[in-house]
Structure formats: C-alpha cells, structure tokens
Image (cartoon, rainbow, N blue to C red; front, side, top):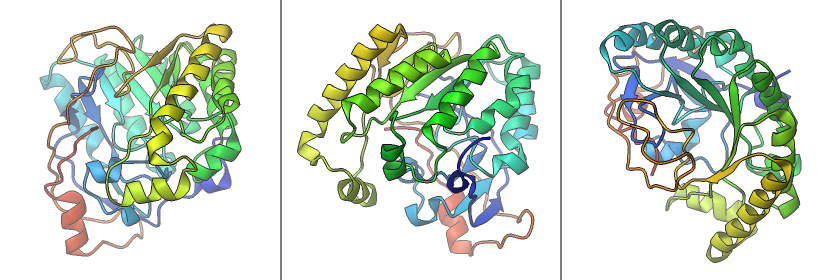
Length: 330
C-alpha cells in the first residue's frame, strides 16, 4: 500500500515535453546535480513554493504534470560526460507522485545512475519509492529522505490533503532502512500551528523506523498567492510564526535526543555532505548555510501527448516549458 485514495489521484493531464538536459548543476547544499523527471506535482502541498520558483501558474501545478520521458536516455549520455557527483531526485517536484507508478521515468533514471555508479539522494512523500529498492540497494551511496512535517494525520490533512498519510511514509521508511539503504526524515516545513506532541511523534516514529537522521526546516513563503494560501490556512499570525517554529524545533530536538536519533536543522535542507563535484563536502551535515538560487534550464515547447491527454494551448506551453528559469530553492 502506498497512500490513500486521495493520494492516488493523478493529475487531470499528463503532457510530454522533450528533454535536452537531464542533470542541472545544483547549488543546493549536499547535491552536485538536480534531476527532475517531472514538472508539476499532483501531491499539491498547500505550502509548496516550487510553482513560484519555476514560474508556473499555481492553479495548473497539480492539474497538469509535464513528463520528460526521454530523461533516462539523455541521462545515460550525461553520466559519461559530466563529473561524477551526488544527484538529487528531485528538487522542484516529487519523483514518486502518482504518475510515476505507470510512467516509471524515475525508476529508469535510477537504473542509469546505478549502472554508472553515481550517488543518489531521493527526497519524497511517496511510499512508491519502495518499489525501486532493488535498484537503490545496489548503490552503496544511495539514500532516501521522507518528507514528514507532522506526526499527526489530522494536521497533515489540513496542509497536505492529497499526500500519503503519515503512517504510510514511516512504514516505507522502515522498509528502506531494512533494505540497508540510508533513510532519513526531512521534517519540513514544520507547520507553525503544530502541537509539540505532533512533532515529538515524528522523532519517536523516526527512531522506531530506523531513520539515520531527522532534519527540520521552517515554512517558507513568497509574496502573492502562496502567502495568501498560507495566511488563510495557518492559525498562527505571520508575526508569531518564527517564535512558534523555534518552540517546535526545540520540542523535536529534545525528543530526538531522548529517542536516540540524530537531529539537525538547516536553512535550506541538506541531505548530506557531497563527496565530489561542486558540493565539495564543505561543512558538516546539518550546518546552517544559505544556498543561492539554482541554475537556468531550458526545454523546448510541448511536442506531443502521451496516451489520450490533450495538448495544452501554445500560450500555456510557452509559460510552462519554454525559457523557464528553474531556481531550485530560495
């Protein structure tokens, strides 16, 4: 099982775009390369700022998912030509959102990276990642992070109504750890209105599941629609959120210490120190270090439609797939 019925819902449209480049140089701490097989995400977390980062209309972010079906083929060429480094899957989408079950673009990318012997770090909310443990377990430098912002499903439903439930993610984390793959919890963003008990539950369940680490991050907002959505949802006024976050971090850190699981905090989440490439391993895991915006990646316009889905209008294609500057994080 890998989620609720709500989580299993895919996007209304799946549109194929060509892929000229699979690996984008990453300035995110701990990654040398970013790999995003999809653009858009059916999980549609209320607090997600990826639509703002890639300049996509938020209203279409979850309803239309663009797939780079040629990414594995392009990636196979790139791993022969580019410097070996840690590949982050994914930085502006979830690599295990519902469309991956049928399309298997993420899986085929993992196969390419495994054959090439490249280290890979997956971050997901999708228990579907356990399907690919046969590949991940072959790599000595593989890891899987599960984004789990609360230990209370009632809170999760308020902020992540289309995502797999908390228990399903912890169950998947345990399976990853049991397979010998490093697994960790990315507790971010902590909801300002969460209860201390809800974040303590993260620590307890992470320890029980065999997590190697719990990493916390705060809620990031941008002026505009995202800020309006967060303000309409969050019961804590903007002026009090930093104080609320600090209290939750303290509760989580204390419970991690009691449960015996390492705790770290990052301004921009940092899966691990890189062993090569641009990351260079500067700083220890969890060190708070600002990360600059990512690099520009260009795709051609939409060229075809997989299955029976309709092609979007040219203006939408231009906005979503042409000259979009993919800035991984703030």
